[in-house]
Length: 287
Image (cartoon, rainbow, N blue to C red; front, side, top):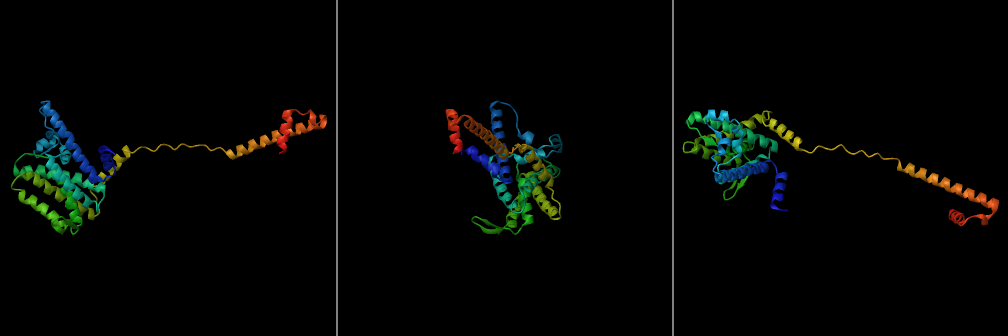
């Protein structure tokens, strides 16, 4: 099995966390290659202008799809690797208590919520900027799990056993202390995603699953691409036994008639009047 086949198998058999990782890496590689080609072609085009979310409300209204797309693109290789490591960590914990469909829903809704927070941040910091990265969506997944099972025990290398809420607190604290330093809008977006994760679990515990529409959406997509079952071929089984019996009866009747004819011939003309074939037939029939 070559590397491509191995990757296809991992994608097919992996869960939603694995698929999200594949999607993020795939988009990063494709658009990085596109960026290189455009630069060599001396075409002045930056794909971030199409997929990144702008905090400027007027720009956002012109490109409303960016509230989704920014969650699947990253500014660089290190940005991508860091986010995917946290996604792998958070997603595995989330799947301990929730389904893949819920994880996908929280990823998308958490990302949207973080994007809205980023756009609203313009009114607080007065600066327009662009946002890419899955950090807000990943924070939603992590905080949702923490809200549901805060005392879940984790073994951290070089540190030891800690509770999940300890990890979440440290990550949130890092975002909070960096708010006034740099990338304020980005850190506010992270906090927005975290807030959605908390809200999601609280609403879920009251009996409402906000991700249910995404479950229906995924089911619809699966049904579209799922091969349709062909109408089973109906084979008509004839009564073979009856045909065989009928055939044997007919053959038996024909043989008996031949025997009767030969016997009549013997009674009239004697045995010596029989032909060679009739004598052989009679001999075989006698056996």
